[in-house]
Amino acid sequence: MHKYLFLVIILFSQFTKAQTINDSSEIAFQKKRNWDTLKYQKFDYVLIVGLYQQHRSFNNEFQQIINKDTSGLSLHSYMAESQLISGVSINYDKFSLSFGTRSSPQSESSGKGYTKAFNVGLNIGDNRYLLENYYRRFVGFYNRNTPNFDSSFKRTGQYYLKPNLTSAMLMSRIMYFTNYNNFSFKSGFGCNYRQLKSAATWIVGASFSVYNFNNDSAILPLKARPLFNDYSEIQGFRSVNFAGNVGAAATIVLFKAWFISGYFTLGPEQQWRNYNLGDHYRNISVISVSGTGRLSLGLNLKRFYMLGSYTNDYNLFNSSAINFKSESITGNFTFGWRFHTGTPTFYRKFQQSKFYKLF
Figure 1: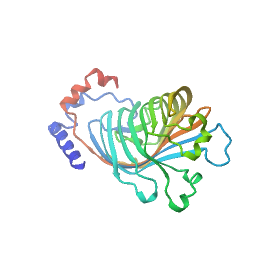
Figure 2: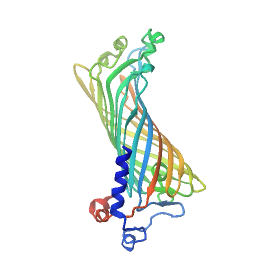
Figure 3: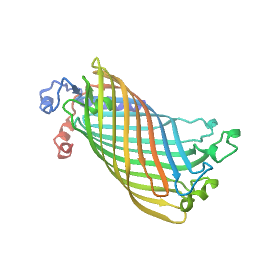
């Protein structure tokens, strides 16, 4: 993958080798600054390439609340863990594209089976707002609560496995930052900006998502099914969601280089769900809750940057019969370099288009 990335950088540079940031034609394309340049700076005409590694886990936890349970068979937590995901991110101006896939297999000896993971993301935005789009998919889960219903677990260490169980999320989220004159969200969770002094902001946002949790057979272990009544043969469900949320973000900067950033959002979510109960389907509409929490720290210099981050995305899919929580946790480490390439001719034309001006 790295050799193809190197070729992309070389080809992009060929388009721009005759240009510099001081070109008068390029200066004509610079927009009037709408922020305090003493607080943060933007890298306008820079191709930014980053390499990252992630550890991801996807927890789908559900519990029946219909029947009284003294045996501990009501709670089931299906976990997927991608031990290591490697990827690349390419950033220019308002756009950021990332792609990652599983690179290190999970140890079979742990009794947790094998998880396949895939994620791709496209972010669009500037210092005022950010439109995040991503798709993530996990295939292969183990039941973390196996000791509650399998007496042989202490001897074998083998979890109850669902190798074909798939959990996927397609998300499109927009966030508006009220204090964009002094605060740059992308300086702490991206690389197009560099925060020079500490600042904070309120966040107002909305999201649209599609969540899919499905298997080719009943998900629950046989011993636990009687407690779940009509949901005993559940094979999964799909939920289409629309949410609004509010929150806050802050970045603390030391020596105009080292930083720590964090943000949290929370809000109501309208969900339209379709349950697959084996021999029939059930549709319900529910107002629930979703949110995001993220923390990052690192070093942000003029050319080189590195950051480590922790992200927790969660959705609640509760009902009168079953409480269900989907939680994705990501640990990420990225390092990258900013290449001062200038602005290619084709991109200047794109900047004049109506589509570009929408953003």
